Image (cartoon, rainbow, N blue to C red):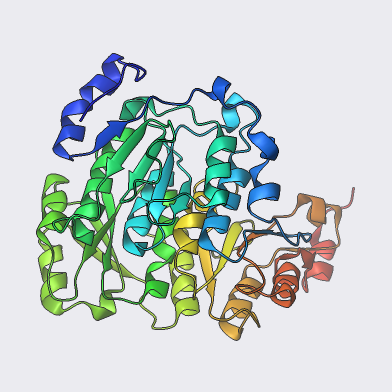
Length: 412
């Protein structure tokens, strides 16, 4: 590993070097200062409109993205970080290969505070046009805790030669099984955070990707890293992380595919709680959105929340959208199993948390709680009719109890 002269050498980043060496993560590139990026080329720093094909916007929803994961990720990054001011420029981005869903999913924790890194996709070792444009428009400042790194490349060399200071997390090596990559990303998050997490999310690698997708937003919001197990065993890399974290809280997603022996072994390494587990993607995402355990979990059971909607058939959209769960109005990921319709389970859930107001001044809409939805992808993922339905389900509306509320209100 080599640190180039342009990398800051303050006391903080220097202390991370041994850990980075242990991870075999390489920092390369001369770095691009924001002053050298100009206005972001034709984008003018406004990545969502130009890169992500920002589509239909309604009263309560905004659609980000297009027909491909790279477009969706670029749109989310640009909406979260316009790059026009110092405060709207991220320290670093995660660059992941479109062919490795599990690595991209595990990288979702890097969207959590304090790093707040958006994720962009590479096509093998090449940069899609949307990704390249988004990188330029973001005006990356560099992460001091990671030696000034601007790009965290997970299993791709697409950023090589582009001039960004890059941390390379290898994935392609035969020894880099998914659990090892997830463990490496957990360690990287510790360095960025400056301390070890007390909670982790554990996924069964063999469970359906649609059932794993909600873990991306949950990890980004909570700062709980994602670790992987197989149905029949707990890999050595995962065991090593759990032992080092000294009996953390373990939240299992997809536990229905794990053997009793695997769950028992995890129970010896931490305090185990199972969440979700429904065989249907929509119902599973709703269960995860409702779940809470003390300070952990979304606990979305009432109005006043951000919500992120994605297609269960497009797994890469979950890591792409993770930043929306860790910034702005912090929304859990809810899944639709087809472009249309909304479906009874999701419709019932949204009706249950739909904002309402009464007739008295104390209960006017301007004093109410509001829900807002981000939709990921084009109409092939979520139809425009579905977007209209979601908009209505998110809209604040008169309460059935409005008359009673008005009667109980004190006279002015």
